[in-house]
Image 1 (cartoon, each protein chain N blue to C red):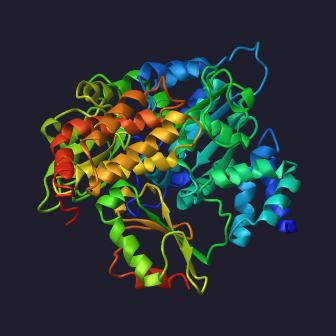
Image 2: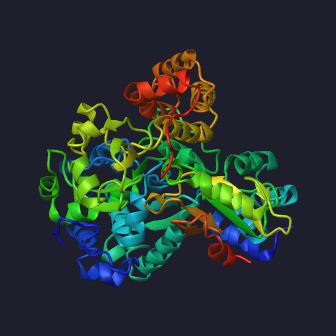
Image 3: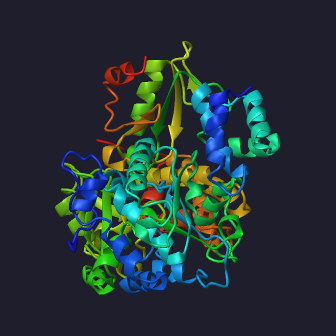
Length: 429
Length: 154
């Protein structure tokens, strides 16, 4: 199964999810067999570490390094947990749904391999409430895996036992924050936790835990089967592997594609998404979902990998690109984004629940023609202060990324709204 | 009072976690899916069954946007108002639904058929504008032709 599109190469034309039989016919579950019959857990971790696989949930932390923090020695005899984060709620992100609905067993096999690597005996798939169809698909796939003996006790004749449970959530973006997700699973109000301690030493019910994004886990089988160097070699610019990129906004063909890490914004937008709709030009893009900084159209030759995007003033995040076209008001776009973040604030820390409220108010005033120059100072004041060392989690700092870049990039639009006491832009076609 | 079926389903979920309270949010969904919403009495009954405090359970129920602590209609419409749907005119869709049903966001039609709610990014950005009706995704919704989609929900 050493193909260059490990997750999507065999997607069905009718868009139905691959069955277990189909997945196996393309080599699925060979990685699990390989691991359980001849690899130590630490070898699986090393393979993932050497592959350079970075967390695909937005933070980009190396997956193998996170796994390596878990104490897998025999001195610790208690439970360990893996949690698969399928709470995908970042504006513009639909890559995890795309993976689960097309190739659910890639995720399941990845969950099993990750559990084996960190010696977890219980793994939870945490899925957002709104992904009802996706949850049904995962339920059926889990049942198939159970029937085939890939879950339960003495899997494939090995000493490895694993229980896999689906947890369906009930809304709120903050549940996707790893430590808040642990609180959610424990039945607590899902506000984030103070760190340290980190999840790998004290996570679910204070046990060693790893929370990984769906896409991160879905790439583990191919890495274990084909090797770290092979996966690394699939990337275009040093950061290894392939990735599910998405493009949304007013393009001809919004969608998701599995492509080498480092594909340029231009290629994504023009070659895969078909360019902008007739009569529209691209103005800027958020490369990695709502909480990343704008990259202007002049820089669309930038590669969609973290190092290249950081050099361009942004970051990879989820790699789910949102286009801003030249006939959509950028102030309106920022207001919509900040409304989302303000609403989704969990309410725990003052800079976030209060700060994002004032940010939204200032943007609303400016968009509606009630803005004054001091409102720009209010926005800059918050950009300066809602930073990771001032807030309890990264929700508010993330919210500031599009705003900070927008204040610079759309300076003229801001001034026009204030001076002309209204929105000079047409909002839609 | 919880039905035997509700209690059974809650007990199945309870067994999947280290503690009883971990089953709380799924227990709330179980009773909500059966009754449409979670009343004060139902909340207390769930709390008793899970052996947790009602105040604690209320804290969860009010945090989660998909747990309804007020009655809803037979069918719940959730329209995405986040960025990609906004760019593809979710405001126009919301206005069209609002006008057609004669209700605003957060309200229920007089005949109890529909409740209309906003929802955050549904992860259907390739099908904007999008909405859920009874948890079923409808993408590329045409604000000028709502009859067909609404007729699926009598």
